[in-house]
Image (cartoon, rainbow, N blue to C red):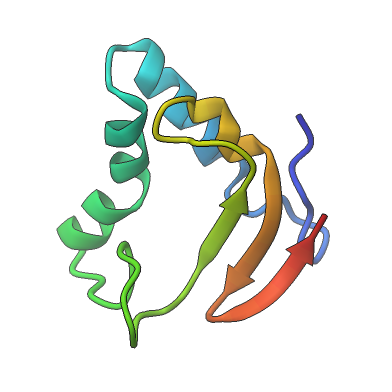
Length: 90
């Protein structure tokens, strides 16, 4: 599945594959998503990210399907927001 390019660099492309490996190793898709988002933000004290809430950084992916049940859905990206600004739309 294609990964969108932002400014010529596939930002974060490897994280999708890492989440696949985590699921293959036995984590649930939801736990793999947490391992790529909220958990590192919390562990590295990045209080402005890792959660969806008012006033936070607002880096988001909109995907087709439900990645909490099928981690491969993270590769079916419809739109990307970085710091609240929409960057990529399919």
